[in-house]
Length: 162
Image (cartoon, rainbow, N blue to C red; front, side, top):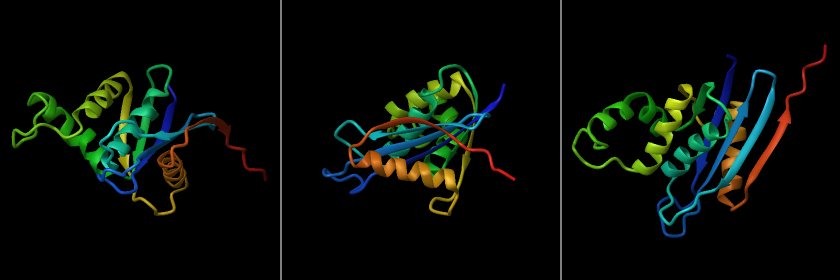
C-alpha cells in the first residue's frame, strides 16, 4: 500500500480570546503526485490554536476514503506529542491526564483517535515557518480558513522536465 503524505496546520488569530477565529489547513499528496488542498474555519465558540491544529489533523485524515498508510507532518508539538506520547496514557486513564485532570480538547482528541485507528499513521514534526514547502502550503491554507473561507481542491504536481 502506497504512503499518503498529509501536511497539516492550524491558525488562530487572537488565540483563546472571544474574538478569535481559527482555521485549519491540510495538504494531502498521494504516490502519483495528486494533491488535495483542504481549508476551512473552525466552528464553535471556544477557538484556540490547539483546536485549530487538531482540526487540521482530523480533516486531513477524514479526507481519506479508505484505510491508508499515512505520514502526517505537523508543526504542532501538541499534536505530535499527543499522538505519539500522551494518547494511549489518556485513554488508559479514562481521558484524564497524569495529574487526574480532564484532557483538554478531549472531544477533538477522541475524534482524532478514531481516525488514527482507522489508518496506519506515523506522526512527524517539522519546524514551522522553516521553508518546508508543503508545511508552508498547509500554513497558507490554515490562514485562509481563519478568514472564514473554505477550500477543497485537487491539483497535480507537474513532473520536472530534463
